[in-house]
Amino acid sequence: MARVRYGARTEAEITAARTASTKLPPIWSTGVVAVWETDPDAVAAVLPPPLKPAARPLVRVNISKVDLPGYPLGAGSFSVAAAHDSVEGWYPLVMPMTHERALTGGREVFGEPKKLGEVTVERDGLGVRAALARHGIAFVEVRGAVTGELPLPEPSRKTDFYFKFLPAVDGSGFDADPVLVHCVRHEKVRRLERITGDVVLRESRHDPVSDLPVVRLLEVTLGEKTSDQRGRVVERVDAQALLPYVHQRYDDPLQVLDAPPEGSL
Image (tube, rainbow, N blue to C red):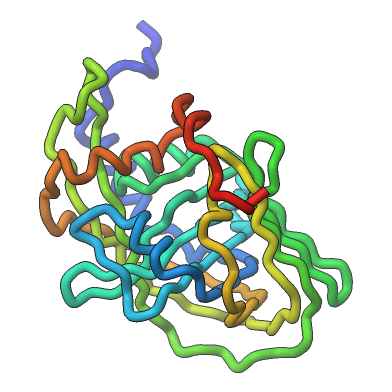
């Protein structure tokens, strides 16, 4: 009988696939990063326990094109500065991806809040435009011009916080205790340029990032970088405490009942 590809893999095939995934060459991306100070109360409001606000109320947006061989990927993240015990890092609220492969792997393995979306990174001479869009709305747009080269930073270590969980089959709560994941990335940069410009946040009921306004823009850069990542479960979290934040992960039809703040339109 010809092989049935949906059938069980042999132990040797499973081992070969796992070994191959650990020998990937460095994958480089070109992207725009913007960092700004925002409303500290807004940052505190979006953090599920046990996460707490970091020392400064910062937002970080990363909008990148990733050079996957034969499989170019648009990848973005919109994160707030957060802390877990003595560890400071970033808590992503939404991570648009242009392909389902990146979406499902990140959500199922790490608990990343990935959603299918459109990711744009364009450069025309010195002009740069980068955007994250879903449902026809570019809810984040960064516009500006390159104004000079920046010195390359030393390789750095960054931590992202994710909550990994499975919604219950009966629609009430979770099927297992949710866990908090620390995802550590080691990042190298081979080119970095300064951008002078601005950040536009547009109202979207599915991606309400406009609730975290740009109070003071700190930096905008265009860079080429590569990184690896390793995740680990650090603790189980209180299911009832996490439940009010689960809508962050999904396009919940009931979000139609969540009116935007007064004066945001």
